[in-house]
Length: 120
Image (cartoon, rainbow, N blue to C red):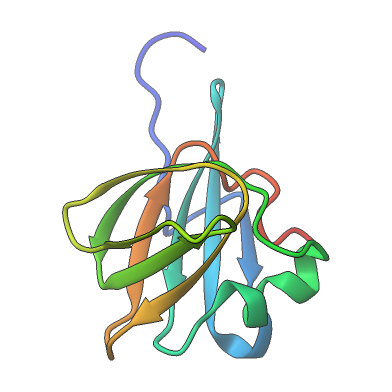
């Protein structure tokens, strides 16, 4: 690809839905790989709404993301935890659970971890 290139999450190449209608992931494909925007609804938790799709004990995706809105808590398999909110940049290695804090959907753009995330 050369020159300008434009993609939009309102017209993605793929949309993946989380279990029980608890959100969605929209993917756009770039030469460097897919970029995803996920909307996680209040009450969403990885171990309830993505684990049945992934079939792993914890999330095995490495995330490199930016939180646009909402709040998410991530707990690593070793017990380390951090809360992320609007304006936070996130680097998260594989091996974690996560859930939404509060009553607002959490919107995250991820440049690394959504290629196979919630892929059926």
